Length: 521
Ligand code: XMP
Image (cartoon, rainbow, N blue to C red; front, side):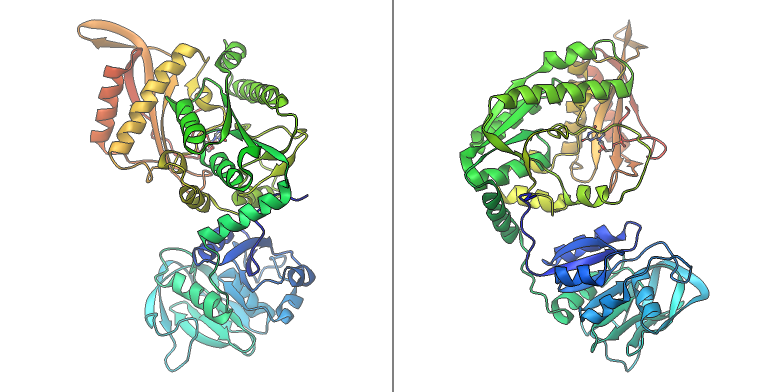
């Protein structure tokens, strides 16, 4: 299936994934050097690699020990393809083990910051002149390389890693024990740059401009003179996907925005304003609030609420698209991280049934156009800015598909939505005023369907509490509650109680994930 993905540039670096979370970070660091990279599994064969014709290979770190039976290996025929190869941590140990070197259990492992020393009198291409002979690197290993691969030279050491870096400039095989991809490694990016730009001779041509140009070209090739529709949620992914497709095919794109009534304050106006007025994109705005409130009445069980919202959304979207019968293409904002994560085949328990507004059922009769399939979130944001989308959309925090429906604990009514919208607007406004918008991963208000007693102006009150939730997270799988300044919390609390009718108490959620989740339902 043609998928409208920007065609991959000619020069690609394949990051071979040996587990844990390292591969994605490496792929992003490579891209920051304007070199296109993709992640592949360590089960890839030499033939598959040869077909992809990568300009370089990077073997990632991983949690296993190469000395344990069953540890992930790499097809050794890959090393005969003559592709410049750089091993990191586990990847470096594997190179040593598979290519005639030695990996041993050493005195003790090294975890965290460590000093790396270039070996006196030895030329190094990776740790070249611009890099201090002694510098800080970030380590995480218990085994250590004691002999480099046959033909390679050891060029650096640390207290517990006698071969902390090795190089074979003839075969173009390189390895480092530390993690150059993490920010704590002082010259990490310089080492990667040296490998990619010099040793592998890759031109750093993968830039924002080239990404946009090649996406537009690919979309035009896929859609031809057909028509496309796009479900907009106001979130950054669908917004950027729509803007790109609009650049490519102009008014042959129609966007559908379903207002579920569960959006944040003024959100619907903002979407219409941005897309219809400023971007000139044809937009069908369906005000479907009543359609959602009716089946939600009296429903309190979180999964039941999620299912109702998801199903109603699909029905409303299908009705809207019925009038666009000649559209054969559906635009979706699928990201590279979604592609990588769905490729793991892991069977994990369903904690919550996620639903993406704008995401659709499997049986839709469209060909998908997914222009962001090769991009990470931060790259999508840069594309969005380049295409002229406003900061409020480009830097929007993640927002759950079911919207405020899962931030009202208990049954959902228009009245409670109105209370929550106002409290939430105060939280966002104060976070913005404090300049924390891009620093805090998510910040929002939650309304609990209980009432508590208070006193205001000598009167007894009996009203809802609002809970403020603010978290820091890198990947949503784990999160920590944000240490918001007390003064900021105080201002939020005062403003919410004074400005929002129906609220007489404010609490702050200090639960990390796990054991909590980010959303309350
Ligand atoms: P939890 O609550 O599971 O949330 O810790 C993790 C991240 O996912 C967002 N979230 C959703 N996003 N559809 C979405 O598109 C959903 O149904 C949904 N539920 C939660 C949540 O805001 C957080 O960023």
